Length: 104
Image (tube, rainbow, N blue to C red):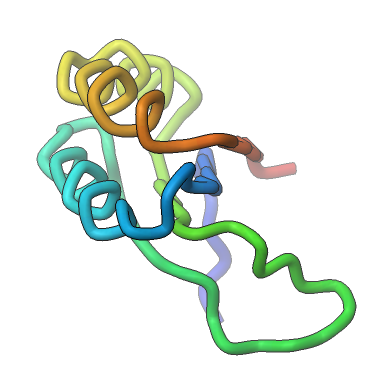
């Protein structure tokens, strides 16, 4: 099994103000796909898994793999990401939690 090397992981969970806005948020997340700093991207919803340690309270998740912390910083200021944050995440979400990690 290959181990990810030289990878910056950016995982974001979104809680919507209104569950009816899920498709709109997902459409907004899809606008991020062409950003050149992204190595891999996954847009998802909670899996139907039920164990005590699993938090399924969020509505949508975004997982992005970058080649470096610098690539992730460039993504943060990319105009497409800025527009997504202002036009989708901020108005549609009551809560956003970001977890970033790097290789040890």
